[in-house]
Length: 157
Image 1: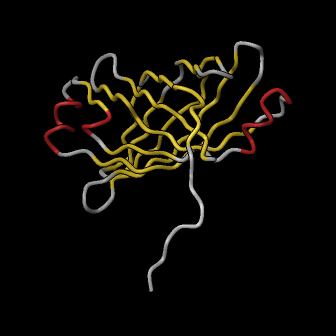
Image 2: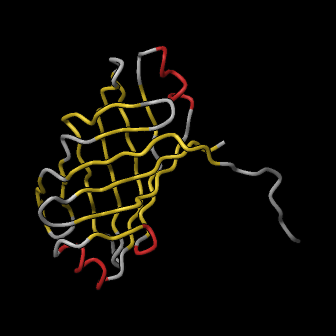
């Protein structure tokens, strides 16, 4: 029996998140928390900045991948407060990871870094975000001094 899909998932670009890495808190060999208390949010229908508290909890998994558990606070340029949370998976080849950790910048083709954001806000201008399941893909990841992560986020339609 052959199974074929009966629907199509389309993506609509929502925003780009740029989050400088403010510091790391290593709990043990399997868990590190990366803080990012500044940054920008920019898209066709939303512009703003990332606020504290914002952090990614990264858990090392058997086999070398990382699981992401993140929480983010956003203040839009027009005064709204938005909460964003996501889980995700990161897989980076050991040589690329070492290059990034030494201060290099990885691009999307050099890593698998995919997240599944959801949003929450009381502001009626952004209520539409609460009705969206999004996916995010990291397009740049820089380690070391001046480190940051940059994601593109898309609504799944």
